[in-house]
Amino acid sequence: VGNLEAVIHHFGKVDLAREENKKVHYLQMAKEQAAAEPQNPQAHFNLMAQAAVAQDWQQVITAGLAHLALQPRPPLMVLTTLALAYQETGQPAEAIPHLKRVLLQNPKHPLALTRLPISLAQTGRPAEAMKMLERAIRMFPSLPAPRRARAEIQLSLGALAEGQATLKEAVAACPTDPSLREKTIKLELNLGHDAQAALQAWAALKAIPHGGAGHWHALVAGFLLKSGESEKGLAVLAQGLSLYPAHPGLVGLQRASRAE
Image (spheres, helix red, strand yellow):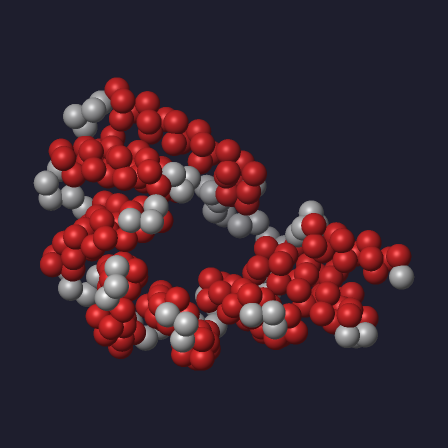
């Protein structure tokens, strides 16, 4: 094995606990900068960005509005992030003008074309939302977000079969998107279809072997062990534990299998 003549600058990102602690530290630094420089739009932009990483959505709104007050022509990222924060805090109507403003500047902005229909559906305009999502899917057939949004709207309206069909189409178009796989698995679990959820998790692992943060492995291993396929179940369990040794579901399955 030879030496790689390269510097890996972001190797520290594999330390997940450290990454979580950094979110808090960087957010505090951004708050201090914004407080010290209240007339600096960049300081409020930095605070908005760090708050979004930490999922402090109310702080995102405060910082985003402060930036807008100082910068009449903001980067589109400010508008989309502010809109997302309004949606995450249960204020879908407040997101609409920001997303429409993005689309006025860039009618083919994929994120705005996906997020605006979500707000439209949540404010009583599902037909308009679906029409816009169909357009987004045609424009970006390999992008998972519009299909995922369409499925979410269909499911929220009680159109179970349509939502499931959309998710199936989305997975076929974007087989390595973990969020689509996770949504499909959770839907089956919510419906009480445990066996189908395990089969979906197994398909997800074949497409994304390290996906699911241990949850997919636990579902598959548990299903196989209960079905009497001990050898396959233990193999999946071992694979999951090698990747996520502290996952409680995997650890519990290991203890149960040893006790038998």
